[in-house]
Length: 137
Length: 137
Length: 137
Image 1 (cartoon, helix red, strand yellow):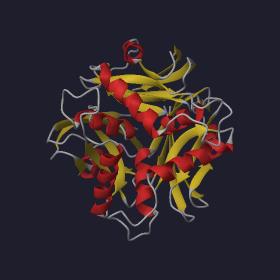
Image 2 (spheres, rainbow over the protein chains, first blue to last red):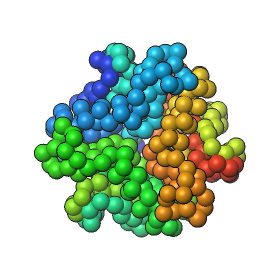
Image 3 (cartoon, rainbow over the protein chains, first blue to last red):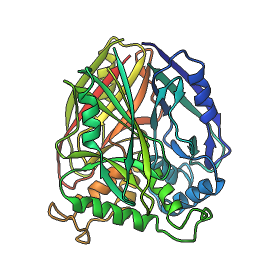
Image 4 (cartoon, rainbow over the protein chains, first blue to last red):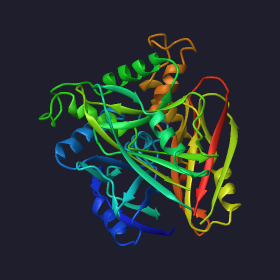
């Protein structure tokens, strides 16, 4: 049994999904752990993780439209000091994931053909986001 | 320390929750790992995982009604090539889980009395869905 | 490699978020596992887990307002025997987490500066909730 941990930073362009699959795949490929469990963790409460389709970018646009409708920006929240997009960002993070765990078989993540791993930035402006990858096996 | 990994396929009847608890319980019981961590992973973006009540089937019906209301079928999505139920399926998957982790104590999952593990099919017609179970301990 | 498992009970005051970070941090600190993975599991389907902001309590109030609006109490659910707040509680649990996994580095959870771990009680009246912590590393 062995373990590996690595942190990395993603600079987001503001609201939307950034594909981080290759980063996670590369980390797993760089370890000599053939069989195990990869856990990804997001160190923020206004950005989050999501596994979603990797093919049609319209899926990502429709997801963004959905979340804007469900948790609209505005001054109707109690928590407003950080701007009209901050509380919606917390709600969107609550509805998605802070951590994801994916089994590793034969040195590869068992992601399905159409699955990508995304960092979902929920704030309107660009941010630096810190993620942690942990592999055990 | 030891590990075990196993994939399995679930044929879904179309939209709704399929109880897969016995399948996961059986996998754990078949390993000689008394204490550990079970992770379940769904290799799809229009089906997902959920831990929910195992007693009253009306809970599952109400859940389905809720998700149909929150993400209705229709032609108002950008992503429409795969049918009016495909983009809602992606949204429903985003709001639920791709992976679940459950501790194992004395060779058994620590599920609560009323908890079952479900595969949630979000597409209207039947599908074959692949899941992966990983146990370490 | 080593493991540790511990259960604990949280008495909730009814609907709302209870900060359980210190409980989880204390468990990790009490083990001699410098590097590893902490998994937290909630043994209920009308209470759940959430990582959210630890600073402004208004964030927690706005989250509660959001979930009450998305899944309102009422007699319009099929599942009503346990009260008008029970089915909404199941929906809220489905939209949040049953399990959370957080890497441990240098004996500490890699939580971000603004992150706390919450048990989210979704029922109107106080409950005793059982959680399980599992650490491997």
